[in-house]
Length: 183
Image (cartoon, rainbow, N blue to C red; front, top):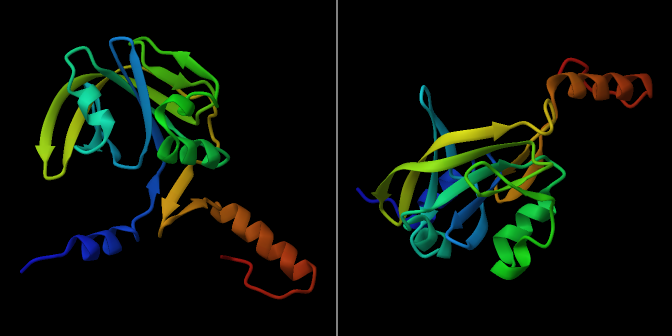
């Protein structure tokens, strides 16, 4: 039994994912791209993973011996920055945002929701992508307790916490608009 690439993608669009900008430094070169293929691997030692398509220029940079990378977890108000790193030419990408140099030298976004600065712990070829396991050398949470940017069903989404839904429903009821108050 075989699953087509189209079927596979159609199923996975139903899985919500956080949105990140992965920044890479190799020698004097820096690069960044929007990535949702990111996950935590281990707290001891602190390890994370990203998956990068072999056709992307980031792949070549990450294969260099001196490559380091950072994962910048985006806040819900950073949709435009995500699009910038997904669609604009390389030289234009870092013109927006407040970028700082992390411990490894990789760029981190000063107002990201959170960031992780990594050295490459290992890499594993997986079909059209390579999985890079990063050992976290430094991390930060510039915007604690703020909502993340989420990608689901081919679009950006914002989280609405249960308490916020309940509050909105109560307001609707008090305004005489009906609805269910316990979401």
